[in-house]
Amino acid sequence: MTIAQTVNRHLNKKHIDYQVVHHRPSGSSLESARSAHVNSQEIAKGILLRDEYGYVLAVVPASRELDLKEVEQELGRRLHLAKEYELNEVFTDCAMGAVPAVGPAYGLETVADTHLRSLEDIYFESGDHEELIHVAEPQFEHLMEGVSYKHISRPKE
Image (cartoon, rainbow, N blue to C red; front, side, top):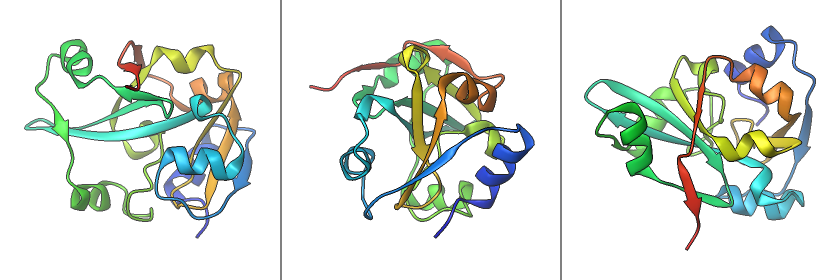
């Protein structure tokens, strides 16, 4: 598979300078980081959440875990993890479970962890389980225009 069409259109629309990093097929962001020889803190991982009002994409470094209570407090909503079938409904041009961290490309309300702003380089799923998109942090912020950055993660236990 290649870059999801929606992600590709968003990259082009925003005139983003990026590289594609190929890796062995993986089932998680941490596996992708190991396979691509990338620090897991540099991988922006998208986590789809839902409530009665719709979907929210939370984006955190793969080296950290989502603090759902913080997201709920920041947004004033009672959220839960979206079901697997919902991932397919939202990310129709992506492989099952390959969630790109660029919610604005999919018209999703998105909240990103502030830790991502301290990085020089950021990698995220391209829409399959074999490629990552690599961008410099300012380019990532441009992709995420309109997204709020909050403290929504905690160290993994």
